[in-house]
Length: 367
Image (cartoon, rainbow, N blue to C red):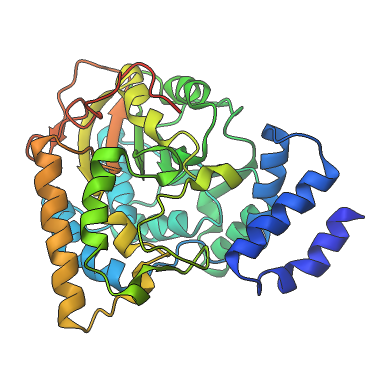
């Protein structure tokens, strides 16, 4: 009964302001379940993503920033963007083992990235590969299945419905990949144990993810810098598009309170350091994030000189503070393996250990 009603109401709910949708979700799920536990959050996530076909849309100013600063950084390491990063690692693994390569993608969602990766591999002459897409939302996996069929690459894919908080591998994989999914995981310890098992002695774990404070908040040392720049913004630029509210001072909202977004982001890096060795580690971004994201980034015009120079100045300060160790990065791309004795290739001095936040214990960050 409730599922049918959700299907009918979902198109109308999408037209509401985001903050109204937050309140409605609280009432809807709170009215049918008691408490605010794991099962309820899972139901919210599945319901939300079942109806969302576009989940990676970013404002033009973000593309300006990434093409101006992030892309040259990545190209120093031999790839241009995240899907290219994953494809390069799979390509290298395929060449090293000389047999069909097996890949599993944890939290694959609609599988658009996996489709792009598969096409890149085929363009580069890698044709013997299988990618198993794992996600908890059947509707997203079905969209992925249809996407692969429409692009003629379905033979390279398998689809598995599973909760990555409880997933265990049924086989050894050459490559485990996680693309922007780890920051939704509550049982990181269990998932890292499962990945450790899945890659065996010779496999690799490849990820692109968020490693900042839980709920994608800023830690105090970064928040102070954000507030400095915030005061330079015209009032219209301080309007939060997602929450539909004016923020004369940056609100530092904890988005993990309504679902799994950033639920344990700050634990990802310290736990990964304990569990794996790093072949490659690239860390970037912190203060720049609020100015290029979906909440405030749409206010910036990528054709206006003031807007571009403002973003340039924020990026320069962001980078200088990270390299000085004053603030810690909020993003990483990494290639890991079981062998913890390997020495990673890194950008400048930003090793995994250097990028841990200085003012808290690496053993257990406060939630």
